[in-house]
Image 1 (spheres, one colour):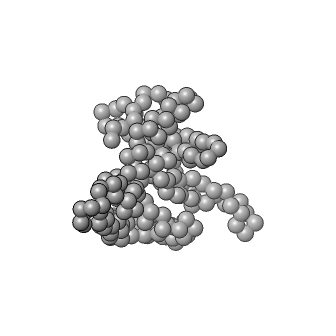
Image 2 (cartoon, rainbow, N blue to C red; image 1 turned 60 degrees about the horizontal axis):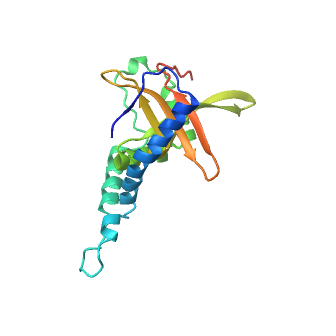
Image 3 (cartoon, rainbow, N blue to C red; image 1 turned 90 degrees about the horizontal axis):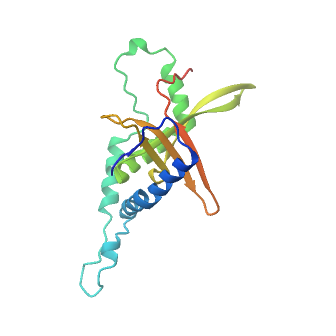
Length: 190
């Protein structure tokens, strides 16, 4: 997989449509093939002649390996803090509330599965205004995005960093597009 690179500071509609078209034609078929392997639908084995014994036996070892890896490597709620001097007293209680509101365990598991299957995973973070006890409160939210619906675009530096991400969903009648610019050093106040 080669990185999509750009030196532009912003993307217009034609750029977005170009990147989506390129992603749908080159990257998505490859990702769909990897997903079908996880689903134990290996076309190369299924299409073999049926007359030869044992040549069409499909075993879900790939799924077993992925699920075992996810179970060990992507446990929910693992927080590692090296220096607790900088951590406020209520930090862990606030993090636990955020994790519970976002169902962090299942989302972490799904991100681990996507990482193991596709070699990449994406998570979007946003703030959701919610009324709690009659007050408007901004709650941090996050969700995993299927790599088939996310396009990462990097800058042209010697060590490329993600500059843009295009999240889209293909629906029968229309195609929705959202651009998320990466915001570095955005503080989260609790």
